[in-house]
Length: 315
Image (cartoon, rainbow, N blue to C red; front, side, top):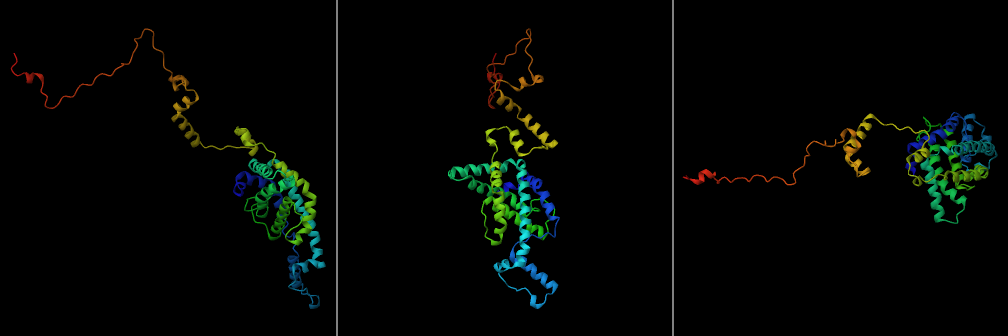
């Protein structure tokens, strides 16, 4: 399924929906929203080295992550960054939900099958549980890889700088955790940002994931235009002159078979007036083919003499 999401329709959707958001974020190269206490503390240590603090004010080195998280100066830096991350993630989620109708039909059909198979295997499962399985495909396999590595999916032209790239990674984590519905994380510091974000968006995320599945099965109608209309609104078919020539050449080569398959009682002469046989004239003699073949002359043997030579002195 990962390979299917990287087909052209999926890439076009990702670029149409995510490109503006990612480009607007990477323009702010100096915007740092790091909330890992250990990394925030490392930044403080680096700043201390640059400003050359007095030894009495020196920050302790080699402390644990919990010790860094308990420091007031670290908390003071992290609190506004948490609100900033929630705002960025909310804007991404709003954009993705607004682009519901742009999602390729194949992606929506896969989500529908996940919902159908999940309900068949787990009939007592709640909608929230079903949405977790759908989100495991839509966000984990489709949306989030493009957010983390937008250049690889050709969403943007260049690789983001370090700070925007770290922010995009946080956004992908928040969206995935929202799709999975937990309010906690393996990283303790993520709980501060995940809990309020999940509580704010739990209902609209579930409604969105269920709405993705509301598409018609392509095998319910075998007409190609229905599938094409759901796959892509502005369809443009490109065909070369060589392909047109090859198609006509193949049709002409199998003309007899095509006519006999479509209507066994008709022939090629019936379908082409120029090739139609003229009825025989009333006064013209009818030509009938012989019913029996003429007997071929027998081959004479080499030793067989003409009759006159065999008769000798006949009178």
